[in-house]
Length: 219
Image (cartoon, rainbow, N blue to C red; front, side):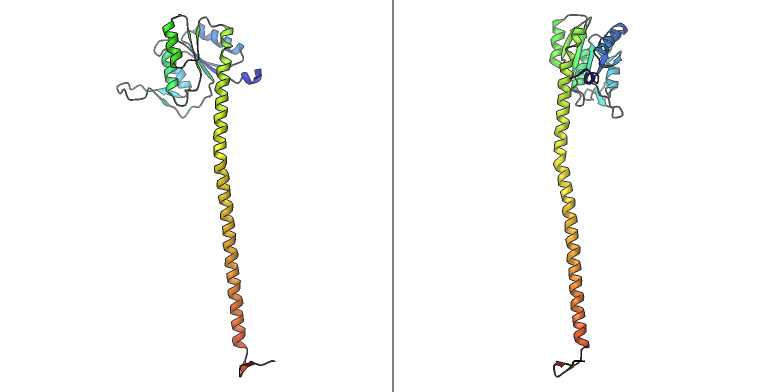
């Protein structure tokens, strides 16, 4: 995949630290990605088209729900682990719980090297776990994840299109058959009408011709 195609990849970077956000933004743009930065997990969910449900009194109430008014195309989310309110791990879980977003790759960043934390994030579905400060060489590992996800997305779209094609062909065939049946019905009706008219004219001519002793007179 060339540089022009790679530049179309859109990365959402989440970090409550302004300095770290600026750093990751600069590194991502250096790698020719389109970048959007937000300072909290809640804003990340909002940008992705999900909104938090503030009613926590009912444990059966979903934590996020789709916002149909916003559609964005994000190819990867990279988020800090330690953030006030919603942590990077919480954001990861909410993304993976969403039927519309679960295929988006998520990468976690942290300044603390805690093996149990790393394992928990990877088990929950994170693609990578980077230790801060993030380096340009780290971001080179993002490309395969985005390319794999894009390939799966293209295959899904192609499969859906192939499933729709027989239905369209069947619908077109049905229309043609209906038109042919209609034309045949009209033709049959015209034939019956013409036959009835011919028979009527024949009877009328027969009645008006004088006969004597069963022999028609010749004029």
